[in-house]
Length: 92
Length: 90
Image 1: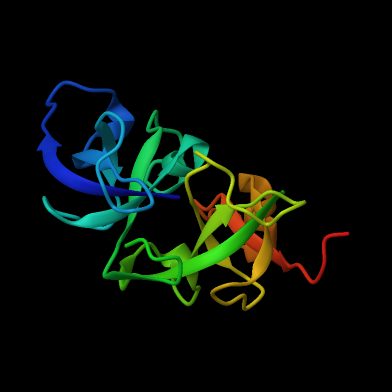
Image 2 (image 1 turned 120 degrees about the vertical axis):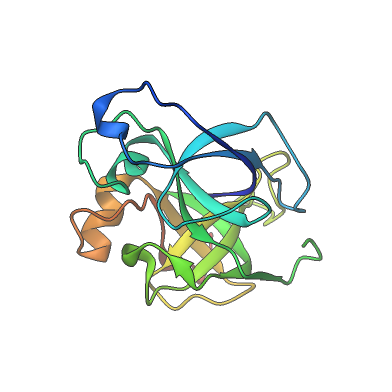
């Protein structure tokens, strides 16, 4: 699982059938200190996250398993909304 | 498996069912010989299954099937799991 922040959503009316009904979120990956890192990616939403939410997203086959249809082409899915991160190594 | 130091925990109330009742820990890969964080290795956010705490040296497994076997949930979309608390690296 990795940290990210939802910065928007993606609407696609024409898509493969198994993605029907899945919300697509634009997610900005975050590094260990919570700063933006890398390019935003599009992830399916499994927990009703909204713009501005700091979330956990999972990639690979696990992302497909987080959605309703077992066999779908998702390679990233938001699986948790983070309330807080408590750390001992001085990063946020 | 990766040798990591637990650097914190993640609190999340809105999450998928497979993650309910599990603590989420932030782990940073460390050099086995020195225990120093590996430069540029980022962090792994793992499901705790051994009651590890902040500051512990742990082993993190980053593979889906193993995670599902450990969590005893064949459909859990989980890949990263803390599987051991390390006492010593010799």
